Image 1 (spheres, helix red, strand yellow):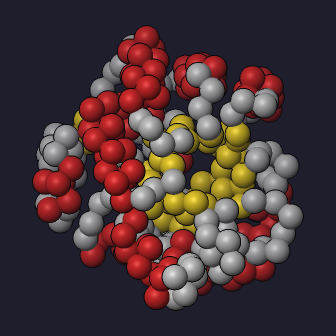
Image 2 (cartoon, one colour):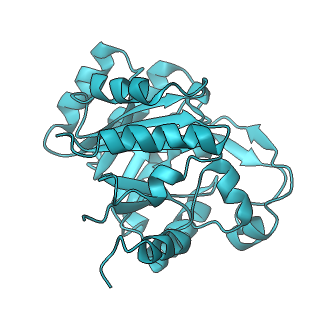
Length: 265
C-alpha cells in the first residue's frame, strides 16, 4: 500500500505568515505545501492571522475578511520571496471567488499571474478546468517539462452521485499530470459518496485526488492510502472544528494512518 504525499495548504494573508506556516508544516513532516496566492488579496480584520498560534486558539470567533488591491509587480515580488524562502516543494494556486478563493481581479490578470508563476518553475501549479482553452494551452506549453499540472474541478453545488463524481474525474483525466475533484459536502452521508467514487477509481491508470469541503470531506483523505490517492491536503491548524470543514491536520492524519495500519511500523 503506497502512502500518499501530504500537502499542507498554508495559512496566512501575508508573505511572512505564509512562510511561518510553511516552516511549521516542514517540522510536522509535510512532503510539500500549497500556496494560495489569492489569499494575499484579503486581510483579516478580526483574529490577526500573523499569529498562527493565536488563530488556532481562537478559531471559534467569526472571521471577517477585507478585500485589498495589490499591484501586479507586488504580487510577483511576493511570489518570488515565497519561492526563495520555502524549502519544501510548492503547489501554487490562484483561485477565484467562484472556486472558493479570494482573487477578485480580472481573468486576464489572473492568467498573467499564473504565467509568471510557471516561469519561476515551481514543482506544481493548479489550473482549474474553467480556464478557457486558448489560455490553458499557452500555460500548458509554458509548463511543459518544467512544472507539473494539477487539473482541478471545484464545485460548491450539491454533491452529485458517486457515478457522476467518477464521470467528472474521467472527463478531465487528460488535462493534467494530476486530477483533483473537490465538492462541497454537508454531512457524512455525502462524504461517503466521495469515498465510494474514490474506491471505484483506485485502480484507474491516472493519478487523482477525490476530496470534499465540509462534514465528511475528510473521509477520502483519512483513507487515502487504501483508496490509492496520489496526495492528500492537510493543515497545521488544530481544533475539533476542522472536521466540520472536512479537514484534518498533519499529526492527526499520521496517527489515523498508523492506527488503521496504512503505514509501515
